[in-house]
Image (cartoon, one colour):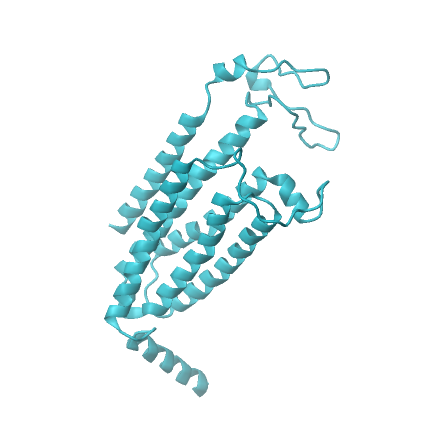
Length: 281
């Protein structure tokens, strides 16, 4: 049942991302009708699309120039496809993994094993990723926002290690749940990587390698960079319904099972026996 649930949400996320990419990609004919002829020095595409390759410098690096690139897409098209892949594939997969993780906790009766303490660690991780997500939705992506994202990811990884270290000693962490954890750890890193690529000049400025000094002020997104309001509302509603609400329900079950206790008695007994064993050694 758990494998079927995880497979279902994964397939749904893949379908949602693929469908959104196909809908938002402009037809090839439309791009060709608005294509600007290459000027002097611009790279002219090869006669065969299969052999159309960008020029290579003496150092072996591929030279990417303004306008059409070797695969028939402009730099603007590639930017839009990468952005849509992040918004409509990576983010849904991340949400699906979070929901699958909650189901794994429920299936292993977290309220009788690790209790409120582990759920608080889950809510802490949700907060650590929620803050940079809100920043990405509403603030201009610049050095302070990128630094916030990177720092939040590192803190999230440390909390996740704490969470798993506590959980494996007190309840059954199944192979399916471990596989879900791999998604929850790597998808935020993929998202951060895509954002960095989409705003590469800001990444260079943040590390002092750009042509301009880094601007460390926080600003709302400009009209040109604003995300569609429909996407923002849908995403926030989905997070509330599929992430926040399930984990609040998990917290209620923990507290209802053992009111006033962070750790159920069974887990405390296991910890006490382990400490006695360590002292005996």
